[in-house]
Picture (cartoon, protein in one colour):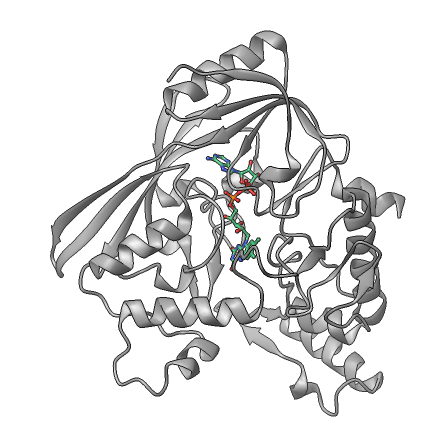
Length: 366
Ligand SMILES: Cc1cc2nc3c(=O)[nH]c(=O)nc-3n(C[C@H](O)[C@H](O)[C@H](O)COP(=O)(O)OP(=O)(O)OC[C@H]3O[C@@H](n4cnc5c(N)ncnc54)[C@H](O)[C@@H]3O)c2cc1C
């Protein structure tokens, strides 16, 4: 199909928040070759370009985006069984527009282990490396063997090995330098006939009654756990208009974590410092639970500020209840951030990407 560039298209229906204004120009990318063609067209017009996947980690400004939005809709999964020293493994190359959860479903069906705990995460495969999606003890980066990208400046194709992707907790080179590459496909290595990973305490205890849970059972358990927290996209769920977690979990030094726990004790929020949830990292740092900080800063689940609020099932998810504007969501996010800063001295950092909006500028103006 030839590339069709449309003048003006609403973006809100293409995001899980259901918020934001239109794109000045819009194109659906159904073939990898469309990307270079569209980038060249935008360069001629001197227009900025934004790459859109499933819109599940995105906050679009009410004013919209004054450039070209490329909606990644390329499809295809190529599965190959390969021999390794340890036996056999699966290699799969997946086009950027595939739904991430369809990839997980295919993997589980084949007995291919490595991404089963990432079941139920909305969005596309092409966006998975961007914030190195993670849940229940796994991260996308653990299985990524290479990322095929188009360099937006030179239009060169490159296969980036994981070492060049700068993966970290909910971040990567692609998130830090958003204007540099378009991700066309990813290649994952998965263990053939592998066992599910049960590293996350909540997941391990949910399958504790089963002798040797299969990949399919772990996938189903993860989806069930996520559903209880409104962390799968479900049209029937009143908390559905969100981007999942709105803030990343802060990572601080052990000393800072202790000081925050002491502050919580002094404020009468918890009886002892050990009552504050925290997770030691391999580098000695400590990950705090942003949802816990929000609730203990006086903002409970179900908190409302007009048309937006905090999910009734997850303190870390901000939700649009309908008939709102992005400005309402940003106001709520600033309110939540301010409450946590005031009570604990911790600076929450948003996880979603802002389009047409500058979060640091919004913070500075607050
Ligand atoms: C209910 C819910 C639950 C969630 N749970 C989790 C979770 O458990 N763990 C987690 O990590 N995330 C979670 N998320 C966030 C989100 O699902 C992921 O970040 C997902 O990877 C976003 O994919 P997307 O296709 O929707 O990306 P979009 O929102 O469309 O885009 C996000 C960013 O990726 C860029 N991008 C997208 N595609 C490409 C491409 N092909 N090339 C270059 N850049 C690209 C965009 O430009 C943008 O900067 C959740 C979201 C929701 C709504």
